[in-house]
Length: 583
Image 1: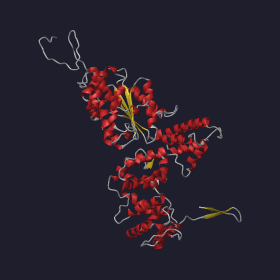
Image 2: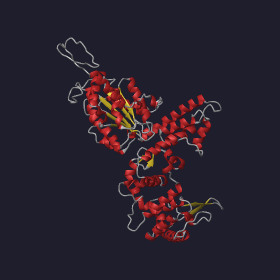
Image 3: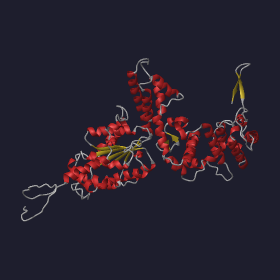
Image 4: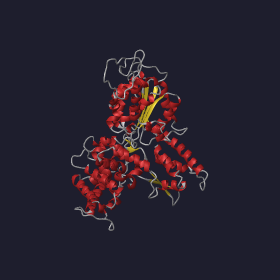
Protein backbone atom coordinates (compact mmCIF):
# COMPACT_ATOMS: atom_id res chain seq x y z
CA UNK A 1 0.00 0.00 0.00
CA UNK A 2 1.55 3.36 -1.03
CA UNK A 3 0.65 7.00 -0.41
CA UNK A 4 3.30 8.46 -2.72
CA UNK A 5 2.44 11.74 -4.42
CA UNK A 6 -0.69 12.19 -2.21
CA UNK A 7 -0.88 15.45 -0.33
CA UNK A 8 -3.07 16.79 2.48
CA UNK A 9 -4.31 13.32 3.41
CA UNK A 10 -5.77 13.06 6.91
CA UNK A 11 -6.70 9.91 8.87
CA UNK A 12 -8.69 10.55 12.01
CA UNK A 13 -8.79 7.86 14.74
CA UNK A 14 -7.90 5.13 12.29
CA UNK A 15 -6.18 1.78 12.76
CA UNK A 16 -4.06 -0.05 10.23
CA UNK A 17 -3.41 -3.77 9.99
CA UNK A 18 -0.71 -5.44 7.98
CA UNK A 19 -2.45 -8.52 6.60
CA UNK A 20 -0.40 -11.12 4.77
CA UNK A 21 -2.40 -13.25 2.33
CA UNK A 22 -6.18 -13.35 1.67
CA UNK A 23 -8.58 -11.75 4.20
CA UNK A 24 -12.01 -13.27 4.93
CA UNK A 25 -14.47 -11.33 7.10
CA UNK A 26 -16.42 -13.67 9.41
CA UNK A 27 -18.95 -12.27 11.88
CA UNK A 28 -20.67 -15.62 12.56
CA UNK A 29 -19.55 -16.04 16.21
CA UNK A 30 -20.71 -12.51 17.00
CA UNK A 31 -24.06 -13.04 15.29
CA UNK A 32 -24.50 -16.42 16.94
CA UNK A 33 -23.84 -15.12 20.45
CA UNK A 34 -26.28 -12.27 19.94
CA UNK A 35 -28.93 -14.69 18.71
CA UNK A 36 -28.47 -17.05 21.65
CA UNK A 37 -28.73 -14.12 24.06
CA UNK A 38 -32.02 -13.14 22.42
CA UNK A 39 -33.22 -16.72 22.72
CA UNK A 40 -32.38 -16.77 26.42
CA UNK A 41 -34.12 -13.44 26.96
CA UNK A 42 -37.27 -14.80 25.29
CA UNK A 43 -37.29 -17.99 27.36
CA UNK A 44 -38.57 -18.61 30.89
CA UNK A 45 -36.11 -20.48 33.15
CA UNK A 46 -38.70 -20.49 35.96
CA UNK A 47 -40.83 -22.92 33.93
CA UNK A 48 -38.25 -25.73 34.01
CA UNK A 49 -38.86 -28.80 36.15
CA UNK A 50 -35.71 -28.10 38.19
CA UNK A 51 -36.01 -24.33 38.51
CA UNK A 52 -35.47 -22.50 41.78
CA UNK A 53 -38.84 -20.77 41.34
CA UNK A 54 -40.63 -24.12 41.68
CA UNK A 55 -38.52 -25.43 44.57
CA UNK A 56 -39.52 -27.63 46.24
CA UNK A 57 -41.60 -29.01 43.39
CA UNK A 58 -44.55 -31.33 43.94
CA UNK A 59 -43.62 -34.94 43.27
CA UNK A 60 -45.17 -38.34 43.87
CA UNK A 61 -44.44 -39.88 47.25
CA UNK A 62 -42.72 -43.26 46.95
CA UNK A 63 -45.31 -46.02 46.72
CA UNK A 64 -48.05 -43.75 45.35
CA UNK A 65 -49.47 -43.29 41.82
CA UNK A 66 -47.82 -46.60 40.91
CA UNK A 67 -50.34 -47.62 38.23
CA UNK A 68 -50.32 -44.21 36.52
CA UNK A 69 -46.53 -43.99 36.49
CA UNK A 70 -46.22 -47.54 35.16
CA UNK A 71 -48.55 -46.67 32.27
CA UNK A 72 -46.50 -43.55 31.50
CA UNK A 73 -43.18 -45.41 31.55
CA UNK A 74 -44.65 -48.21 29.42
CA UNK A 75 -45.64 -45.56 26.88
CA UNK A 76 -42.12 -44.12 26.93
CA UNK A 77 -40.65 -47.58 26.36
CA UNK A 78 -42.80 -48.54 23.38
CA UNK A 79 -41.77 -45.47 21.25
CA UNK A 80 -44.42 -45.92 18.53
CA UNK A 81 -46.89 -43.27 19.72
CA UNK A 82 -45.56 -39.74 19.66
CA UNK A 83 -48.00 -37.91 21.97
CA UNK A 84 -49.28 -38.79 25.45
CA UNK A 85 -52.05 -36.68 26.99
CA UNK A 86 -52.57 -36.96 30.75
CA UNK A 87 -55.80 -35.27 31.84
CA UNK A 88 -57.40 -34.99 35.23
CA UNK A 89 -59.47 -32.78 37.50
CA UNK A 90 -58.16 -29.65 39.17
CA UNK A 91 -55.96 -30.51 42.12
CA UNK A 92 -55.73 -34.17 41.15
CA UNK A 93 -51.93 -34.40 41.41
CA UNK A 94 -51.15 -34.00 37.71
CA UNK A 95 -48.14 -31.72 38.25
CA UNK A 96 -46.63 -34.16 40.75
CA UNK A 97 -46.87 -36.90 38.12
CA UNK A 98 -45.30 -34.61 35.49
CA UNK A 99 -42.48 -33.70 37.90
CA UNK A 100 -41.78 -37.32 38.80
CA UNK A 101 -41.68 -38.36 35.13
CA UNK A 102 -39.45 -35.38 34.28
CA UNK A 103 -36.91 -36.34 36.93
CA UNK A 104 -36.94 -39.98 35.83
CA UNK A 105 -36.36 -39.03 32.18
CA UNK A 106 -33.58 -36.62 33.20
CA UNK A 107 -31.86 -39.45 35.07
CA UNK A 108 -32.08 -41.61 31.94
CA UNK A 109 -30.82 -38.76 29.72
CA UNK A 110 -33.99 -38.94 27.60
CA UNK A 111 -35.44 -35.61 28.71
CA UNK A 112 -35.45 -33.05 25.92
CA UNK A 113 -37.11 -30.23 27.83
CA UNK A 114 -39.90 -29.22 30.19
CA UNK A 115 -42.28 -26.32 30.57
CA UNK A 116 -44.61 -26.02 33.57
CA UNK A 117 -47.33 -23.47 32.88
CA UNK A 118 -48.71 -21.57 35.87
CA UNK A 119 -51.31 -18.84 35.50
CA UNK A 120 -50.19 -16.89 38.57
CA UNK A 121 -46.57 -16.55 37.43
CA UNK A 122 -45.64 -13.98 34.75
CA UNK A 123 -43.82 -15.70 31.91
CA UNK A 124 -45.19 -19.11 32.82
CA UNK A 125 -48.73 -18.17 31.81
CA UNK A 126 -48.16 -17.35 28.14
CA UNK A 127 -47.44 -19.20 24.91
CA UNK A 128 -44.78 -16.62 23.95
CA UNK A 129 -42.01 -18.23 26.01
CA UNK A 130 -42.80 -21.90 25.40
CA UNK A 131 -40.79 -22.63 22.24
CA UNK A 132 -37.72 -20.50 23.17
CA UNK A 133 -37.58 -22.29 26.53
CA UNK A 134 -37.84 -25.73 24.93
CA UNK A 135 -35.23 -24.87 22.28
CA UNK A 136 -32.75 -23.63 24.87
CA UNK A 137 -32.96 -27.01 26.61
CA UNK A 138 -32.72 -28.96 23.35
CA UNK A 139 -29.44 -27.22 22.52
CA UNK A 140 -27.85 -29.25 25.32
CA UNK A 141 -28.63 -32.37 23.27
CA UNK A 142 -27.50 -30.94 19.90
CA UNK A 143 -24.76 -28.44 20.88
CA UNK A 144 -23.28 -28.48 17.37
CA UNK A 145 -26.37 -26.61 16.14
CA UNK A 146 -25.89 -23.76 18.60
CA UNK A 147 -23.94 -21.49 16.23
CA UNK A 148 -26.31 -21.99 13.31
CA UNK A 149 -29.36 -21.43 15.51
CA UNK A 150 -27.95 -18.25 17.02
CA UNK A 151 -27.05 -16.90 13.60
CA UNK A 152 -30.53 -17.71 12.28
CA UNK A 153 -32.18 -15.81 15.16
CA UNK A 154 -29.89 -12.82 14.70
CA UNK A 155 -30.67 -12.70 10.99
CA UNK A 156 -34.43 -12.91 11.73
CA UNK A 157 -34.88 -11.61 15.30
CA UNK A 158 -38.65 -11.31 14.93
CA UNK A 159 -38.94 -15.09 14.61
CA UNK A 160 -39.14 -15.26 18.42
CA UNK A 161 -42.32 -13.19 18.26
CA UNK A 162 -44.00 -15.10 15.45
CA UNK A 163 -46.78 -17.72 15.82
CA UNK A 164 -45.84 -21.00 17.44
CA UNK A 165 -46.15 -22.89 14.15
CA UNK A 166 -43.55 -20.62 12.57
CA UNK A 167 -41.18 -21.04 15.50
CA UNK A 168 -41.51 -24.81 15.30
CA UNK A 169 -40.82 -24.84 11.56
CA UNK A 170 -37.91 -22.39 11.61
CA UNK A 171 -36.25 -23.19 14.92
CA UNK A 172 -37.06 -26.69 16.21
CA UNK A 173 -37.13 -28.79 13.04
CA UNK A 174 -33.72 -27.48 11.77
CA UNK A 175 -32.12 -28.64 15.02
CA UNK A 176 -32.63 -32.21 13.89
CA UNK A 177 -32.03 -32.11 10.13
CA UNK A 178 -28.67 -32.23 8.38
CA UNK A 179 -28.93 -28.79 6.82
CA UNK A 180 -28.47 -25.17 7.70
CA UNK A 181 -31.21 -23.02 9.20
CA UNK A 182 -31.64 -21.39 5.81
CA UNK A 183 -33.19 -24.59 4.51
CA UNK A 184 -35.93 -26.07 6.69
CA UNK A 185 -36.95 -28.69 4.17
CA UNK A 186 -37.89 -31.62 6.42
CA UNK A 187 -37.10 -34.00 3.57
CA UNK A 188 -33.44 -33.66 4.56
CA UNK A 189 -32.19 -36.63 6.56
CA UNK A 190 -32.77 -36.18 10.31
CA UNK A 191 -30.03 -36.32 12.86
CA UNK A 192 -30.03 -39.71 14.54
CA UNK A 193 -30.39 -40.08 18.29
CA UNK A 194 -30.17 -43.37 20.15
CA UNK A 195 -33.54 -42.68 21.81
CA UNK A 196 -36.20 -40.05 21.00
CA UNK A 197 -36.20 -37.16 23.44
CA UNK A 198 -39.20 -36.55 25.69
CA UNK A 199 -40.68 -33.05 25.95
CA UNK A 200 -43.02 -32.57 28.94
CA UNK A 201 -45.52 -29.70 29.02
CA UNK A 202 -47.54 -29.42 32.22
CA UNK A 203 -50.60 -27.27 32.91
CA UNK A 204 -51.53 -26.53 29.30
CA UNK A 205 -54.92 -25.24 30.49
CA UNK A 206 -53.11 -22.53 32.49
CA UNK A 207 -51.70 -20.96 29.33
CA UNK A 208 -53.56 -17.76 28.51
CA UNK A 209 -56.14 -18.09 25.75
CA UNK A 210 -58.07 -21.11 24.49
CA UNK A 211 -56.83 -20.48 20.95
CA UNK A 212 -53.22 -20.52 22.13
CA UNK A 213 -53.82 -23.86 23.84
CA UNK A 214 -55.27 -25.26 20.61
CA UNK A 215 -52.32 -23.89 18.62
CA UNK A 216 -49.87 -25.65 20.93
CA UNK A 217 -51.61 -29.00 20.45
CA UNK A 218 -51.92 -28.56 16.68
CA UNK A 219 -48.31 -27.41 16.26
CA UNK A 220 -47.03 -30.34 18.29
CA UNK A 221 -49.22 -32.61 16.19
CA UNK A 222 -47.67 -31.26 13.00
CA UNK A 223 -44.17 -31.63 14.44
CA UNK A 224 -44.72 -35.26 15.42
CA UNK A 225 -45.75 -35.93 11.84
CA UNK A 226 -42.13 -35.37 10.78
CA UNK A 227 -39.04 -37.50 11.41
CA UNK A 228 -37.85 -35.21 14.20
CA UNK A 229 -36.92 -37.51 17.14
CA UNK A 230 -39.15 -35.85 19.72
CA UNK A 231 -42.08 -37.22 21.72
CA UNK A 232 -44.43 -35.16 23.87
CA UNK A 233 -46.19 -35.64 27.19
CA UNK A 234 -48.87 -32.98 27.67
CA UNK A 235 -50.66 -32.62 31.00
CA UNK A 236 -53.84 -30.59 31.51
CA UNK A 237 -57.34 -30.49 32.86
CA UNK A 238 -59.92 -32.14 30.58
CA UNK A 239 -61.08 -28.88 29.02
CA UNK A 240 -63.37 -29.46 26.02
CA UNK A 241 -61.40 -27.33 23.55
CA UNK A 242 -58.20 -29.19 24.44
CA UNK A 243 -59.92 -32.55 24.04
CA UNK A 244 -61.28 -31.42 20.68
CA UNK A 245 -57.82 -30.31 19.54
CA UNK A 246 -56.36 -33.72 20.35
CA UNK A 247 -59.25 -35.52 18.67
CA UNK A 248 -58.62 -33.64 15.42
CA UNK A 249 -55.00 -34.76 15.10
CA UNK A 250 -54.60 -37.23 12.22
CA UNK A 251 -52.82 -39.85 14.35
CA UNK A 252 -53.51 -41.61 17.59
CA UNK A 253 -52.87 -39.88 20.90
CA UNK A 254 -52.43 -42.05 23.98
CA UNK A 255 -54.72 -40.71 26.71
CA UNK A 256 -54.53 -41.34 30.45
CA UNK A 257 -57.57 -39.92 32.25
CA UNK A 258 -57.16 -39.43 35.99
CA UNK A 259 -60.93 -38.81 36.13
CA UNK A 260 -61.43 -42.51 35.50
CA UNK A 261 -63.19 -44.04 38.57
CA UNK A 262 -60.43 -46.65 38.86
CA UNK A 263 -57.74 -43.95 39.07
CA UNK A 264 -59.84 -41.94 41.55
CA UNK A 265 -60.23 -45.00 43.78
CA UNK A 266 -56.49 -45.69 43.64
CA UNK A 267 -55.77 -42.02 44.28
CA UNK A 268 -57.73 -42.24 47.54
CA UNK A 269 -55.48 -45.09 48.69
CA UNK A 270 -52.44 -43.01 47.74
CA UNK A 271 -53.80 -40.01 49.64
CA UNK A 272 -54.15 -42.18 52.75
CA UNK A 273 -50.43 -43.07 52.45
CA UNK A 274 -49.54 -39.45 51.76
CA UNK A 275 -51.41 -38.17 54.82
CA UNK A 276 -50.02 -40.83 57.15
CA UNK A 277 -46.45 -40.19 55.93
CA UNK A 278 -46.69 -36.42 56.36
CA UNK A 279 -48.53 -36.56 59.69
CA UNK A 280 -45.69 -38.78 60.95
CA UNK A 281 -43.19 -36.12 59.87
CA UNK A 282 -45.23 -33.44 61.67
CA UNK A 283 -45.22 -35.65 64.77
CA UNK A 284 -41.44 -36.03 64.60
CA UNK A 285 -41.01 -32.25 64.43
CA UNK A 286 -43.61 -31.43 67.06
CA UNK A 287 -44.13 -34.53 69.20
CA UNK A 288 -44.58 -32.64 72.49
CA UNK A 289 -48.13 -33.07 73.73
CA UNK A 290 -49.20 -35.30 70.82
CA UNK A 291 -50.25 -38.91 71.19
CA UNK A 292 -47.76 -41.32 69.68
CA UNK A 293 -50.16 -42.64 67.04
CA UNK A 294 -51.61 -39.38 65.78
CA UNK A 295 -54.00 -38.85 64.19
CA UNK A 296 -55.98 -42.09 64.43
CA UNK A 297 -56.88 -43.95 61.24
CA UNK A 298 -60.54 -42.93 61.41
CA UNK A 299 -59.51 -39.25 61.19
CA UNK A 300 -57.29 -39.92 58.19
CA UNK A 301 -60.12 -41.89 56.58
CA UNK A 302 -62.42 -38.91 57.10
CA UNK A 303 -59.91 -36.59 55.43
CA UNK A 304 -59.49 -39.03 52.54
CA UNK A 305 -63.25 -39.11 52.07
CA UNK A 306 -63.42 -35.31 52.02
CA UNK A 307 -60.60 -35.15 49.49
CA UNK A 308 -62.53 -37.09 46.86
CA UNK A 309 -59.25 -38.26 45.37
CA UNK A 310 -57.93 -34.70 45.14
CA UNK A 311 -54.31 -34.39 46.19
CA UNK A 312 -54.45 -30.63 46.53
CA UNK A 313 -56.91 -31.07 49.40
CA UNK A 314 -54.53 -33.42 51.18
CA UNK A 315 -51.49 -31.22 50.57
CA UNK A 316 -53.40 -28.16 51.78
CA UNK A 317 -54.34 -30.01 54.98
CA UNK A 318 -50.68 -30.90 55.59
CA UNK A 319 -49.52 -27.33 54.94
CA UNK A 320 -52.12 -25.98 57.35
CA UNK A 321 -51.61 -28.53 60.14
CA UNK A 322 -47.81 -28.48 59.80
CA UNK A 323 -47.42 -24.71 60.23
CA UNK A 324 -44.61 -24.47 62.83
CA UNK A 325 -46.19 -21.41 64.47
CA UNK A 326 -49.27 -23.35 65.59
CA UNK A 327 -50.10 -26.53 67.48
CA UNK A 328 -50.83 -29.36 65.01
CA UNK A 329 -53.66 -30.90 67.05
CA UNK A 330 -55.50 -27.58 67.25
CA UNK A 331 -55.01 -26.90 63.55
CA UNK A 332 -56.29 -30.34 62.59
CA UNK A 333 -59.27 -29.77 64.86
CA UNK A 334 -60.10 -26.56 63.00
CA UNK A 335 -60.25 -28.47 59.74
CA UNK A 336 -62.34 -31.29 61.16
CA UNK A 337 -64.70 -28.92 62.97
CA UNK A 338 -64.64 -26.19 60.31
CA UNK A 339 -64.10 -23.56 63.01
CA UNK A 340 -65.50 -20.11 62.20
CA UNK A 341 -62.83 -17.70 61.09
CA UNK A 342 -60.33 -20.37 60.13
CA UNK A 343 -59.16 -20.29 56.52
CA UNK A 344 -57.16 -23.47 56.01
CA UNK A 345 -58.03 -23.79 52.33
CA UNK A 346 -56.97 -20.50 50.78
CA UNK A 347 -54.97 -22.29 48.08
CA UNK A 348 -57.86 -24.63 47.36
CA UNK A 349 -60.33 -21.74 47.28
CA UNK A 350 -58.16 -19.87 44.82
CA UNK A 351 -58.05 -22.96 42.63
CA UNK A 352 -61.85 -23.25 42.58
CA UNK A 353 -62.32 -19.55 41.88
CA UNK A 354 -59.89 -19.86 38.95
CA UNK A 355 -61.90 -22.76 37.51
CA UNK A 356 -65.16 -20.83 37.79
CA UNK A 357 -63.59 -17.55 36.68
CA UNK A 358 -63.12 -18.73 33.09
CA UNK A 359 -66.93 -18.73 32.67
CA UNK A 360 -67.63 -15.17 31.62
CA UNK A 361 -71.43 -15.11 32.03
CA UNK A 362 -72.09 -15.28 35.80
CA UNK A 363 -75.90 -15.56 35.79
CA UNK A 364 -76.27 -18.96 34.09
CA UNK A 365 -73.24 -20.18 36.05
CA UNK A 366 -74.90 -19.37 39.39
CA UNK A 367 -78.14 -21.01 38.25
CA UNK A 368 -76.25 -24.16 37.27
CA UNK A 369 -74.34 -24.21 40.58
CA UNK A 370 -77.62 -23.74 42.46
CA UNK A 371 -79.37 -26.75 40.96
CA UNK A 372 -76.19 -28.82 41.29
CA UNK A 373 -76.07 -28.00 45.01
CA UNK A 374 -79.78 -28.19 45.80
CA UNK A 375 -81.26 -30.83 43.48
CA UNK A 376 -81.21 -34.47 44.44
CA UNK A 377 -78.36 -36.31 42.69
CA UNK A 378 -80.92 -38.88 41.54
CA UNK A 379 -83.09 -36.18 39.98
CA UNK A 380 -80.07 -34.65 38.25
CA UNK A 381 -79.10 -38.01 36.78
CA UNK A 382 -82.65 -38.59 35.56
CA UNK A 383 -82.81 -35.13 34.01
CA UNK A 384 -79.41 -35.23 32.34
CA UNK A 385 -78.13 -32.28 30.32
CA UNK A 386 -81.32 -31.85 28.28
CA UNK A 387 -83.63 -31.99 31.30
CA UNK A 388 -81.49 -29.57 33.32
CA UNK A 389 -81.50 -27.16 30.40
CA UNK A 390 -85.32 -27.32 30.31
CA UNK A 391 -85.51 -26.94 34.09
CA UNK A 392 -83.47 -23.72 33.95
CA UNK A 393 -85.30 -22.57 30.79
CA UNK A 394 -81.99 -21.92 29.03
CA UNK A 395 -81.71 -21.52 25.30
CA UNK A 396 -80.56 -24.73 23.66
CA UNK A 397 -76.85 -25.24 24.18
CA UNK A 398 -76.33 -22.72 27.01
CA UNK A 399 -76.29 -25.36 29.75
CA UNK A 400 -73.63 -27.45 28.00
CA UNK A 401 -71.56 -24.38 27.16
CA UNK A 402 -71.56 -23.49 30.87
CA UNK A 403 -70.75 -26.90 32.32
CA UNK A 404 -68.14 -27.80 29.69
CA UNK A 405 -65.80 -25.28 31.31
CA UNK A 406 -66.27 -27.01 34.68
CA UNK A 407 -65.19 -30.47 33.58
CA UNK A 408 -62.21 -30.42 35.92
CA UNK A 409 -64.58 -30.33 38.91
CA UNK A 410 -67.81 -31.73 37.43
CA UNK A 411 -68.57 -35.28 36.29
CA UNK A 412 -70.91 -34.47 33.41
CA UNK A 413 -71.96 -38.09 32.80
CA UNK A 414 -73.24 -38.47 36.37
CA UNK A 415 -74.16 -34.81 36.88
CA UNK A 416 -72.20 -34.54 40.13
CA UNK A 417 -69.15 -32.75 41.50
CA UNK A 418 -65.96 -34.78 41.78
CA UNK A 419 -65.10 -33.45 45.21
CA UNK A 420 -67.10 -32.91 48.39
CA UNK A 421 -64.70 -30.09 49.19
CA UNK A 422 -66.09 -28.10 46.24
CA UNK A 423 -69.59 -28.26 47.72
CA UNK A 424 -68.16 -27.13 51.08
CA UNK A 425 -66.50 -24.24 49.26
CA UNK A 426 -69.75 -23.13 47.57
CA UNK A 427 -71.68 -23.23 50.85
CA UNK A 428 -69.22 -20.98 52.73
CA UNK A 429 -69.68 -17.32 51.80
CA UNK A 430 -66.29 -16.16 53.06
CA UNK A 431 -64.60 -18.72 50.81
CA UNK A 432 -66.77 -18.75 47.68
CA UNK A 433 -67.39 -14.98 47.65
CA UNK A 434 -69.39 -14.20 44.48
CA UNK A 435 -70.02 -17.92 43.87
CA UNK A 436 -71.66 -18.51 47.28
CA UNK A 437 -74.80 -20.68 47.15
CA UNK A 438 -77.23 -20.05 50.04
CA UNK A 439 -79.18 -23.27 50.48
CA UNK A 440 -82.64 -22.02 51.52
CA UNK A 441 -82.96 -19.54 48.62
CA UNK A 442 -81.45 -22.26 46.45
CA UNK A 443 -84.18 -24.74 47.32
CA UNK A 444 -86.78 -22.03 46.67
CA UNK A 445 -85.21 -21.40 43.25
CA UNK A 446 -85.36 -25.11 42.37
CA UNK A 447 -89.00 -25.32 43.50
CA UNK A 448 -89.90 -22.27 41.38
CA UNK A 449 -88.19 -23.73 38.31
CA UNK A 450 -89.99 -27.05 38.81
CA UNK A 451 -93.35 -25.30 39.12
CA UNK A 452 -92.68 -23.24 36.00
CA UNK A 453 -92.24 -26.46 34.05
CA UNK A 454 -95.85 -27.40 34.85
CA UNK A 455 -97.76 -25.46 32.24
CA UNK A 456 -100.56 -26.21 29.78
CA UNK A 457 -99.20 -28.23 26.88
CA UNK A 458 -96.11 -29.39 28.77
CA UNK A 459 -94.73 -32.75 27.71
CA UNK A 460 -95.33 -35.46 30.29
CA UNK A 461 -91.63 -36.30 30.38
CA UNK A 462 -89.15 -36.98 33.18
CA UNK A 463 -88.97 -33.29 34.12
CA UNK A 464 -92.77 -33.10 34.34
CA UNK A 465 -92.90 -36.17 36.56
CA UNK A 466 -90.14 -34.90 38.85
CA UNK A 467 -91.73 -31.45 39.00
CA UNK A 468 -95.24 -32.60 39.91
CA UNK A 469 -94.03 -35.12 42.47
CA UNK A 470 -91.21 -33.28 44.25
CA UNK A 471 -91.91 -29.54 44.14
CA UNK A 472 -93.33 -29.51 47.66
CA UNK A 473 -90.30 -31.35 49.03
CA UNK A 474 -88.07 -28.53 47.77
CA UNK A 475 -90.51 -25.93 49.11
CA UNK A 476 -90.24 -27.44 52.58
CA UNK A 477 -86.45 -26.97 52.53
CA UNK A 478 -86.65 -23.33 51.47
CA UNK A 479 -87.49 -21.79 54.84
CA UNK A 480 -90.70 -20.22 56.10
CA UNK A 481 -93.27 -19.78 53.32
CA UNK A 482 -94.25 -16.33 54.59
CA UNK A 483 -90.95 -15.01 53.27
CA UNK A 484 -91.44 -16.51 49.80
CA UNK A 485 -94.27 -14.64 48.02
CA UNK A 486 -92.74 -15.40 44.61
CA UNK A 487 -92.85 -19.11 45.41
CA UNK A 488 -96.49 -18.90 46.52
CA UNK A 489 -97.36 -17.17 43.27
CA UNK A 490 -95.67 -19.95 41.30
CA UNK A 491 -97.63 -22.59 43.25
CA UNK A 492 -100.91 -20.79 42.58
CA UNK A 493 -100.06 -20.37 38.91
CA UNK A 494 -99.27 -24.08 38.66
CA UNK A 495 -102.56 -24.95 40.37
CA UNK A 496 -104.43 -22.76 37.90
CA UNK A 497 -102.73 -24.29 34.86
CA UNK A 498 -102.62 -27.90 35.99
CA UNK A 499 -105.58 -29.06 38.05
CA UNK A 500 -103.93 -32.31 39.12
CA UNK A 501 -100.83 -30.68 40.63
CA UNK A 502 -101.66 -32.06 44.05
CA UNK A 503 -102.68 -35.41 42.63
CA UNK A 504 -99.34 -36.03 41.01
CA UNK A 505 -97.44 -35.32 44.20
CA UNK A 506 -99.14 -38.44 45.52
CA UNK A 507 -99.80 -40.51 42.41
CA UNK A 508 -96.59 -40.14 40.38
CA UNK A 509 -94.43 -42.13 42.82
CA UNK A 510 -97.17 -44.78 43.03
CA UNK A 511 -97.27 -45.14 39.24
CA UNK A 512 -93.50 -45.57 39.20
CA UNK A 513 -93.64 -48.57 41.49
CA UNK A 514 -92.80 -46.89 44.77
CA UNK A 515 -94.91 -46.19 47.80
CA UNK A 516 -95.78 -42.50 48.17
CA UNK A 517 -94.27 -40.70 51.12
CA UNK A 518 -97.05 -38.09 51.07
CA UNK A 519 -98.39 -36.96 54.40
CA UNK A 520 -100.87 -34.21 55.16
CA UNK A 521 -98.23 -32.94 57.56
CA UNK A 522 -96.39 -31.74 54.45
CA UNK A 523 -98.97 -29.00 54.14
CA UNK A 524 -97.87 -27.52 57.45
CA UNK A 525 -95.26 -25.66 55.43
CA UNK A 526 -98.05 -23.27 54.43
CA UNK A 527 -98.69 -22.29 58.04
CA UNK A 528 -97.03 -18.93 58.49
CA UNK A 529 -94.64 -18.62 61.42
CA UNK A 530 -95.84 -15.57 63.39
CA UNK A 531 -92.25 -14.78 64.36
CA UNK A 532 -90.94 -15.17 60.83
CA UNK A 533 -90.84 -12.66 57.97
CA UNK A 534 -94.07 -12.16 56.01
CA UNK A 535 -93.90 -10.29 52.74
CA UNK A 536 -96.89 -8.96 50.86
CA UNK A 537 -98.37 -11.31 48.29
CA UNK A 538 -101.66 -11.50 46.45
CA UNK A 539 -101.80 -15.17 47.48
CA UNK A 540 -102.19 -16.01 51.14
CA UNK A 541 -100.46 -19.21 52.23
CA UNK A 542 -103.61 -20.55 53.91
CA UNK A 543 -105.61 -20.16 50.70
CA UNK A 544 -103.04 -22.13 48.75
CA UNK A 545 -102.92 -24.76 51.46
CA UNK A 546 -106.70 -25.12 51.41
CA UNK A 547 -106.77 -25.69 47.66
CA UNK A 548 -104.03 -28.31 47.89
CA UNK A 549 -105.68 -30.08 50.80
CA UNK A 550 -108.93 -30.45 48.88
CA UNK A 551 -107.04 -31.82 45.89
CA UNK A 552 -105.10 -34.33 47.98
CA UNK A 553 -108.26 -35.48 49.77
CA UNK A 554 -109.99 -36.08 46.45
CA UNK A 555 -107.06 -38.05 45.06
CA UNK A 556 -106.60 -40.13 48.20
CA UNK A 557 -110.27 -41.06 48.01
CA UNK A 558 -109.88 -42.12 44.37
CA UNK A 559 -106.79 -44.18 45.17
CA UNK A 560 -108.55 -45.99 48.03
CA UNK A 561 -111.52 -46.85 45.81
CA UNK A 562 -109.27 -48.12 43.04
CA UNK A 563 -107.11 -50.21 45.37
CA UNK A 564 -107.80 -53.99 45.43
CA UNK A 565 -109.39 -55.30 48.63
CA UNK A 566 -107.06 -56.60 51.28
CA UNK A 567 -106.63 -60.41 51.28
CA UNK A 568 -108.70 -62.30 53.83
CA UNK A 569 -107.10 -63.16 57.13
CA UNK A 570 -107.54 -66.14 59.41
CA UNK A 571 -106.33 -66.86 62.88
CA UNK A 572 -104.81 -69.96 64.37
CA UNK A 573 -105.15 -70.29 68.10
CA UNK A 574 -102.00 -70.72 70.13
CA UNK A 575 -104.01 -71.01 73.25
CA UNK A 576 -107.14 -69.50 74.70
CA UNK A 577 -105.82 -65.94 74.76
CA UNK A 578 -103.09 -65.95 72.09
CA UNK A 579 -104.43 -65.86 68.53
CA UNK A 580 -101.85 -65.82 65.71
CA UNK A 581 -102.73 -63.89 62.56
CA UNK A 582 -102.02 -65.46 59.18
CA UNK A 583 -102.40 -63.97 55.70
